[in-house]
Image (cartoon, rainbow, N blue to C red; front, side, top):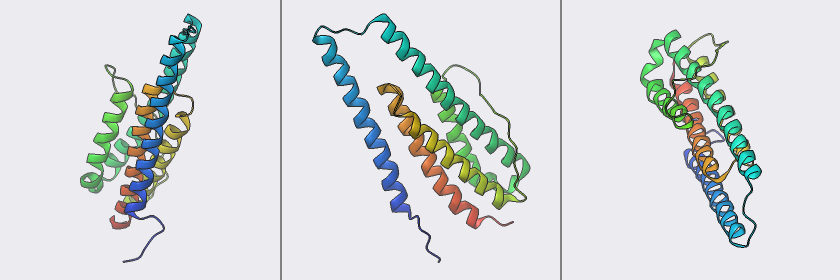
Length: 175
């Protein structure tokens, strides 16, 4: 078997480190807010409104990213039914991630344009899209309030794990 630069252990370690870092950052931020309010500097209505607007903006952006990814999974499954065994569980997980971002609303599917000329290429495109989603969720962590930061860290970790699994699946998929 040929070794690649990415090992399963390395991918899981990186995913765990991202999630742990986000959780620690989220917990620390919440503790600071509570300590600040005890010292006589309560958050003003403007601060809360600004935080709510930031939360909504980040949530909408993450929802768009997850919705586009879900649409891409749907497209690949329709175009290449032979990939259903490997992709269906991952697609279902992406659907759950999308619902976590926007509970109580319908699915938000984006537009998909695939350049893949076969199932293996389509799975590689999905892997690249999952990596992009993980990067987008990780970048949003810096601006997110604690509760959303924990959710985004979880989404980024899941997307990273999916990218690894899809990369391995692409190697096994026949053209």
